[in-house]
Length: 473
Image (cartoon, rainbow, N blue to C red; front, side, top):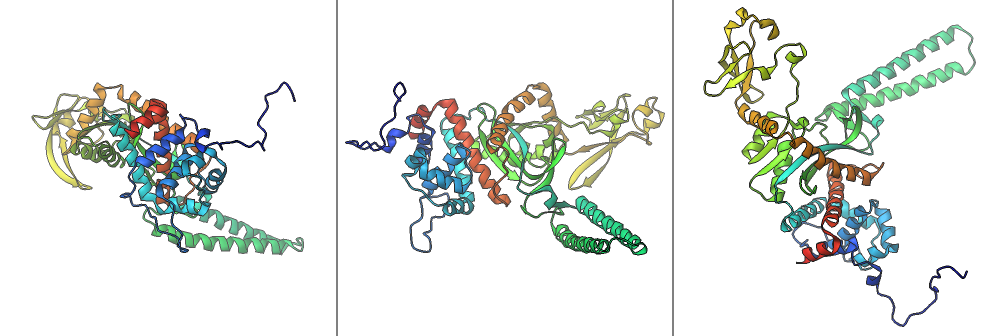
């Protein structure tokens, strides 16, 4: 074998055995994980550290967190795979001090310490604040759908249940007709028996579906998932999936995730204020700017943000039925603040005539009786007169739209900000689904993904050695 690079003899003895530290590069990511978690005070985060039934001491939460953060940073999520890596991976041996917990211990740690793990994710954001990475106080909020283990055939909504029951009933009727036709002829000896067996099986399926329907109707959202009880059917990019809606607030300067939450509500309409307030709290600022897409547009959410000192930039969706009919939409009517009146395209004033309560909101109604004589009435309304309604906090919503009109680059900033984290997280997960079954455990798993993403992002941005020095400072 001359002429090739030769390896060392496996039986070669050394005077001084190699240290484990010699096998870990100075700029290795495990050194960042080690210094971050060692520097973190875990005593007040609520980790469960009870010894097992045999009296053996528990593993320190820092050791288990190091194992998990390393695993998620390298796309190793399974507790069984983490057990194997701890036994053969030199970097993990260095990180955990050669400790190798079994897969059950690893899995139980993630299951039993969900809230504490999410607090560790928040502590990393605090570290970013310490390093002055969030000086702009400007975040982009967005949501993305992630699949659950639950198959679509094991998720039932009212419409899907109604359709399945109708299909089973139609199949029973068809087989009954075939059975009646077979009785009048001379079929094969086993054909009637096969038909009867199919009918019996379908009747059992009908009974099973009826029981599921009763359970489904008792659920708050009248939906049921048999594999993952908290997973829900939701639309994404024109088709449906059974999964979860992952909400994130991302710093627009460094693309770090400052707040996140997993929900099983398919719509983003009621998520804005909650996520914005979480981001504001995590950043520790008095004022915050937030940009989001039109899926978050809702008057009450924008008002809540305004009252919390959060400035929003959100486009209003074009949902006016009048525009589809070729008539003037609401934008054609100008509100005059000092007179509390609207001016229509014909130059007439719409005066406030009444105030009502609708779904807990105070709504003012404006119209004029001159509509009947208006030469362009056909372009405005097909009714007796055109009525314009205005919410008492409408000015807050209008200001949000005006801010966006003055800053059109905001939507470009939003796209450039939120696409990177979601693209990375989905790439890390690949074709796999969430490994867990309840919403609480999915939130824990996503927190580990976010922690690994932020750590990776910071290492790429600052560098491993400078980051170690900054954390230890």
